[in-house]
Length: 231
Ligand code: SAM
Image 1 (cartoon, rainbow, N blue to C red):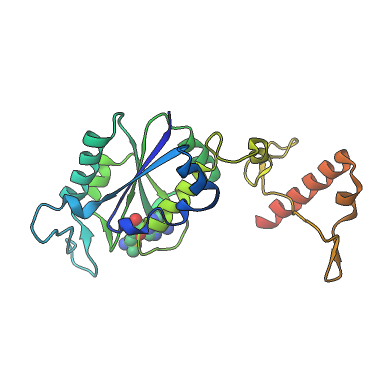
Image 2 (tube, rainbow, N blue to C red; image 1 turned 90 degrees about the vertical axis):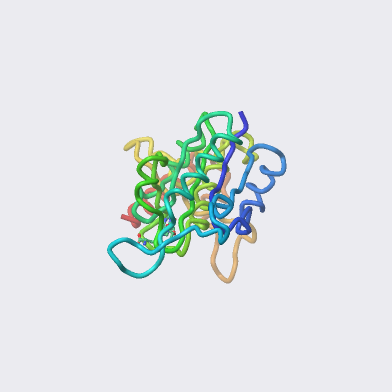
């Protein structure tokens, strides 16, 4: 089954954005995944195409109306998707998105729908009824969910079979690299390329020596050191 992603947004022109470039963009062109973009505003029932209203209880900003968001989600689900999708809302109050979540989403056996909020956010009731999970890309507030949706999709799509040339390289990457002793995830070791000396800085001798066991040992040590520094 081709991985199918549908974005619900008020800013459809933001897509594919970076998802149309590089590894993920090539995979899109080659049909390894499919992207559909839905304009939430197309589901506004009135002639002014109103999507938001003032918040109950007062305060600044506007809130996306539940009936508009629900119509967009349910319309997409009924008309265009054969299987019930997994619906994720991108929001700062969600679970922090990690590499493990990217792996989980890449393994989905159904379409993925990513719902992007804007303004103050989305009426909570539609999140309760129509959304399976809320994901945040970090502890800061973005203007809209579009950048977050691109982050989540980029991290997810590159894990799909065939997207990266050498799939074995995935196991060496940050957060997929496992410490053989502690079984904990590590961030990756540093990389170097030619020239062997640049601005007086030499590439570590062990990497130039060609002893694969020594190189693997050095890389594991470096990954452990870098991971420890992050904590
Ligand atoms: N009033 C909300 C709050 O304080 O939590 C912030 C709303 S924000 C200005 C507008 C939209 O950006 C949200 O509805 C959400 O879709 C998206 N967004 C903002 N920060 C995000 C984050 N860290 N991760 C994922 N989405 C985010």
